[in-house]
Amino acid sequence: MKTVLASILVTLLPFAIAAAEPGERRGPPRKPPQEAFTACVNLAEGDACSVKLRDHTIAGTCEKFPDQTELACRPDHPPGPPPSEGSGN
Image (cartoon, rainbow, N blue to C red):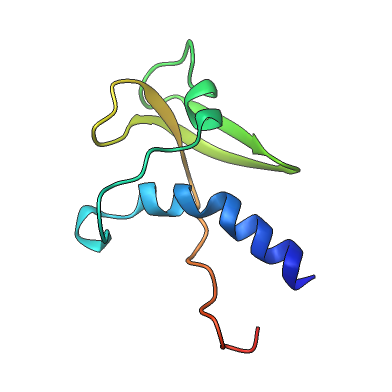
């Protein structure tokens, strides 16, 4: 179960990083996964979108991310950070 949870968190981590407020980021902003861009093809900024990653569908809104010219689907409820090592989870 821990392996499945860790796999899901690793998959969703780019969304969490991209959705963070500018003051909360550490390091350069990451590019959203290609699926996020594909989800907003033929949609306008502010339109509802959804992204399927593995066996999870994530609802969001089409937005332009920093340093990107294309719209990408930003999750409505991004996941939190992965658990830290040694936390016993």
